[in-house]
Length: 137
Image: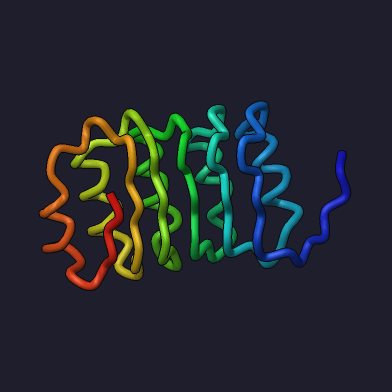
């Protein structure tokens, strides 16, 4: 196993395609100051992997080009919203209801980026939930 400085606050595992939920949990457990996580392209990460990040005050989370679905949005909304201010999603299975859940629960969200979410039909409702949020589509 790779030695990791336990005090890093930014972790980029972008496009580590073999990274699993268990791997992410092991890394997360060895860190004490994590606040920025890039998991873009990590297609094996699911809601369980996201849940493993709950011990950290995650401020920015990039899940672009992943297979995160409605369950993953539920994990974000239920476990990471106390500190999350930036979220990036580029997911084929994310829908309007998923985004509604995240934006309504994550009151600190300042920026949400969604690209390639083919089941997201209308984002105007997001502005009603958080009028100060920057939405990139």
